[in-house]
Amino acid sequence: MSDPHETPAAQAGPPETLDAVIVGAGFAGLYMLHRLRGLGLSARILEAADGVGGTWYWNRYPGARCDVESMQYSFSFDEALQQEWKWSERFAAQPEILAYANHVADRYDLRRDIRFNTRVAAAHYDEAAGRWLVRTERGEAISARFCIMATGCLSAARVPDIPGLETFRGTWYHTGFWPHEGVDFTGRRVAVIGTGSSAIQAIPVIAEQAAELLVFQRTPNFSIPSRNAPMDAEYERWWKSDYAAHRQKARQMRTGILYNIDQRSAMEVTEEERQRVYEERWAAGGTAFMGAFVDLLTNQASNDTAAEFVRARIRATVKDPATAEILSPRNHPIGTKRICVDSHYYETFNRDNVRLIDVSRAPIEAITETGLRTREAAYEVDSIVFATGFDAMTGTLLKIDIRGRGGESLAAKWAAGPRTYLGLMSAGFPNLFMITGPGSPSVLSNMIVSIEQHVDWLTGCLAHMRARGLARIEATREAEDRWVDHVNEVAHRTLYPQANSWYMGANVPGKPRVFMPYVGGVGTYRQICDEVAAKGYEGFRLAPAEAPASVAAE
Ligand code: FAD
Ligand code: N01
Image (cartoon, rainbow, N blue to C red; front, side, top):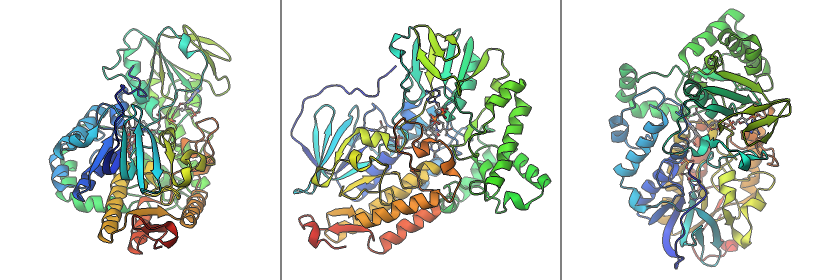
């Protein structure tokens, strides 16, 4: 297993000077570099991995694929790119998405400005110079006017703190840093811990190989069949015939995904009509299920009807009624934890070599030399797969020692939860940007749409500053406070806060319970960002390089 937290040692040297440092070479970092070059700025990406792709570099577990259709889960900024690239399936698998990221890096000649195997340890703002000093784990230093964190919302994989892992004599893996050479589970007894999106994709594939598969479930999730299939030529033609216009529509949608949302409430139609609509969505597959009625995430009674429909499908699919019941989610409204999309997940529990173990009441207490022990029983396995998720949205950022004005640390500032203006900047940290940061739609959306929107906005902002001889931008505390309140207020108009989800930080012991993404919708959010820019970057303080903050233009 490759350890993602180690970078090879190198000599420290004098700081290199650049206009901008970008941390991370996933889709966000790659596109940001491309746009900064377009502005004529000198920029470099620092990337911990030895390749591009971010999520798709690290998450190589069996069954990994996107759940936003590939025709949409792809860049839209270059018509030639979107016309020429051919996706082989409705939902591309990880190797194909990684190949796409590599193609993008090569096509736009990005690699010459990426330093791989380089993990950023610290970023400190030098107020006098108006520059960020970025330090890597190897001790290299780069001085840059702008520092752009493209570090990803789901890039700090978490192995839960279960005692005894070091004593385990078998092999163990985490879906979020899977061995590049793959894993052959043939003949092995395998434990999968977790039943989130990663597990739900991996379990059916591992079950086909393993001699025995034990699935340790703490909380069941709702999952919708993907109906994945080879790319339909007619569908591809439809997209490509007017790609720009379709993308434009997608950008205005709540999720940044073009699909039909039924504008009726689930409560205003007859039971028969509700079932018809759900059946139709279930048969079509994918996350569009949540668009069956307009109020599924705001009205508990409506949500209950969708949740019960899925539970009925689970009962109809899983032959053993006791197993079906354990797989049926009852402790959160459907969609308030990230809805899963699968290929034959529930069917997998009909296999003789697969067993579901409910650890909701009898948690896993220890890893032993030969397997796992819950409060009730011991299980012998050869391999353990942790599909236990991420310290999402803030985890990766806060692993970096980020210090802004007056040496204030971002970790201290965010101790009670992330505070940003628009998910783009945090007050007190001038010229430090986040792509899809907390407080933006990010993980509630087609992330490539949200990445492009942030990168485009930021490119416009930097061009604006250059045209006016401005060198510093900072969110004001007042604008940030207003935005944080707004993000909370909108979240609490929905059912989302009812779930113990990673959106709320609930999966990490001790993490503050704050709803982190902006639930107001991708289209609405874009409009807000555009209005902010049109009003001369309202809520930000812009200043020439050497001007003290007190005389800066508001
Ligand atoms: P990432 O891809 O996470 O890239 C961040 C990069 O930053 C990584 O390469 C990391 O190594 C690097 N990095 C982090 N910290 C440091 C540091 N200190 N120093 C140097 N480098 C650092 N979203 C969707 O919209 N649709 C999907 O279908 C979908 N499927 C997903 C499936 C999986 C298995 C997972 C985990 C996520 C999925 N997502 C999906 C979300 C996905 O993370 C985003 O779509 C997108 O890939 C994020 O791109 P990014 O560039 O912002 O971040
Ligand atoms: O992680 P998760 P993930 N004992 O946090 C369980 C994206 N993604 O990697 O719910 C027992 O969802 C935990 O249980 P509980 C997508 O945004 C997309 O699967 O905390 N169980 C849960 O079941 C997704 O939401 C795709 O009770 C323990 C699981 O581990 C996000 O990434 C594919 C435990 C973690 O689920 C994260 O998904 C993959 C313990 N000690 C990922 N600790 C697509 O399809 C944790 N768990 C696009």
